[in-house]
Image (tube, rainbow, N blue to C red):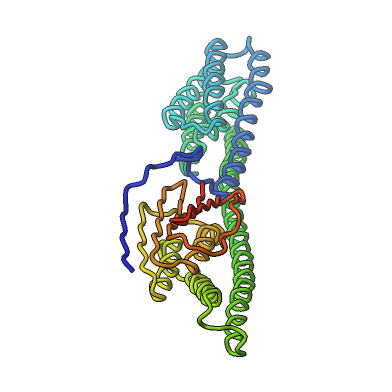
Length: 388
């Protein structure tokens, strides 16, 4: 057998999914969980700032040391919160530390502008509100960043307490309680959201691995059963020929008997080749059929152009089986050609035509692999074509 192989560069077929990264189920579940936690953080921050802080500022307007400064700080933080919240919900990156620094500057200004009388009231809105804005702008960073921001926030409040002379034990106790109340819940939401997202990723990954393993086992079992059924069918054809020869009911010199024997051997050879672990299974199976034809004295050329893409076993069978049957009936010479691209594989066989019944079967198309067959008295031509 003369074998000629040409590996020509195949054009790249672009598909709608070209360049799109495959979806990681675990990452998708983690992203969904993290997205829910982001919504919670944004809603709490803006709702608290609007429903609690603003009415307190307006209600104590006449008693504040610098009410216009307190309101201006409220408006600035509200603007930062809306813009940061929109970017956070869209998954866009935030300039976390510049925003945190801006919030701390507003923190110091509002503590001074609220005055001693409202140092511990809701009119000094930075006490209860600003921690949630730290959670929002630092989302996705490590927890120690939030803790550091809240620590500076507490130091600014302590400076306000000491600056206003509120050093009585009751005032210091109120300060400690306020720091605790306005920090612990924020840290819990921040750390809890991260932990839940991580746990969701781990569990989704484990579930995906389990489903993949189960699907792989099911596929392997179906392949084993299908292979066993096919082996039974092919072996039955070979056993039938051998039994007829052994009983004397078939003549070894009969061309029809020879064709049946060659066809059974070719199918057995191709079935064995299916289980070989090789880079190009289709070419390997076709070479096995060509080698058998060559051993039976049929000169055959095998020409390959391009590299076939990975194909399921069923597609490879539909591409190879009709041509294997024709090879069993070929006389004189044969030429087997494989032209492959990422989205198409064409296998064709040309042999001399000869008198006798047509054993090729009717042309057809099963929806996945197209089969064409022609004969004109000089040559027989058959082609199988798969399109991705």
